[in-house]
View 1 (cartoon, rainbow, N blue to C red):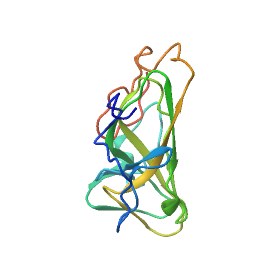
View 2 (cartoon, rainbow, N blue to C red):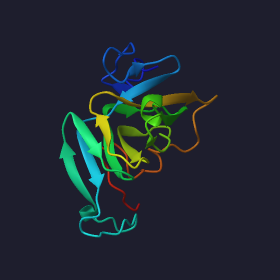
View 3 (cartoon, rainbow, N blue to C red):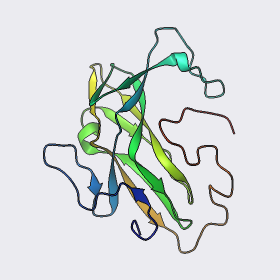
Length: 174
């Protein structure tokens, strides 16, 4: 399906593992890479995180081969890959065990049928120590669930606010 629907670009047909946190096609899913753009949350300006009135003073932008997330802190990033989800598919994402075993938790909300874009990734460092994230290496695994028939109302039908996003998408109201 990945080829037939151009679901993932760029698409890596085999799992890459040598010297990196694995990425690419896996048994029943796809291990996506984190890009080199990060938004690290900080308390420098004592900003309040409010999803209805998001203040960009609450984070700092960083770009590079690695990103260090401070202890008990949080960062936003995005996938290298651009996804196009078919109308009869729902996608669930889980963090990679290599990061999870280091206290780094990855969250991505489900990719709904007919959503497309680069995926914004939420990365939490739950440890009392700084945590390093490696750009252009695996960060999470997407699992694809195909329904028996296309959904009644897709993300595209709803004109979803995060449709065709590129880069790290910040929270916004409809």
